[in-house]
Length: 249
Image (cartoon, rainbow, N blue to C red; front, side):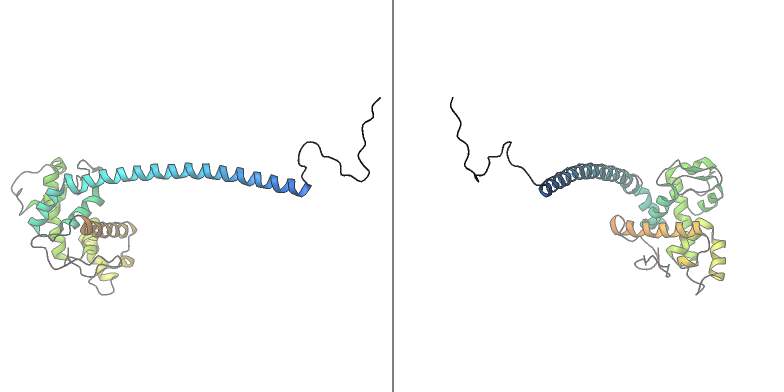
């Protein structure tokens, strides 16, 4: 019977099953595997978030383009026509319309009866005097007509501009809260009794409205209506956010 040769004493034994790792090495491998798995998960999550952000940006861009169409194309001819006719800046008229109705000609507020692009109330029909519509019988619902609405609204803006020296903040406040309130605020809260800083406007809703109008005015001036309306008072408007410093419309 053949006997197998025994390995010499002291010779290293051959290991079976490949490389054996120490405890520390196994811990390192497990940690690396967990790290790689987490990195993969984070990459997938980040990719999904990026896709969501891109979709949201695309949606916002489409909404912006639709809004630009409404505000700079559909009614631009009316805005420029009546801004020029009544000597106010088309950018300011556009800003009022944006913040009153978002360019919805059928906008209506039941509590006040405000109608149309410039949200004219029925009593605003008195400002048709001196316009192309003077002498016509104007029904309340006629104020939904874009041309009539912008015509009367532009004439009213001119009246307020004459009253307040073209100050965009004061005119916005008067359009929102009424000139009697603005006269009182100038007397009681204004440091110089001629202009109103936003901090001096006592009602939050009018303060927010005036700020939005002036901000929109700046955007329209910069991008769409840089030209001055024929006969508009004064030079370039002061578009600082802090106050209306006697700037012209």
